[in-house]
Length: 88
Image 1 (tube, rainbow, N blue to C red):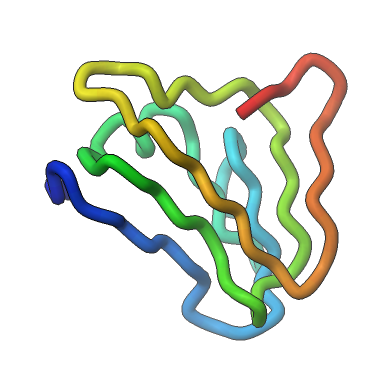
Image 2 (spheres, rainbow, N blue to C red):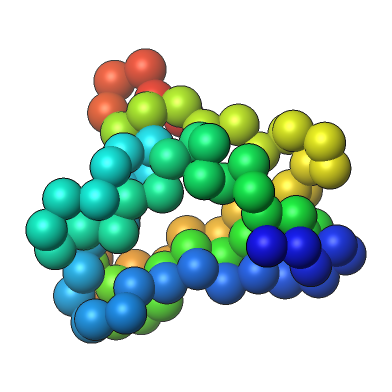
C-alpha cells in the first residue's frame, strides 16, 4: 500500500474487533505484523477508530524501514496496552 507523503488508515471491518500490533489474526482480532506493516508507505499511519476494540502491542514493530512512517496514531474505544518488551 503506497501513499507516500499521505496518511493511511487501517481499521477493523467490524466494530469492537480487537487490534494486535505485532500479532497474528485469530478470530475476532485484526493482527498487523511488523512484516505486514513494512508494506505500508505513508508519512502517517492511523490504526483503529473510536469503534475499535482494545489495541495490544504484542511484539516489536519497526516503522523506520525506508521510507519511514514518521507518525503513528492509535485510536480505540477501549484501552491500549503493550506486552513486556514490545514497543511501537
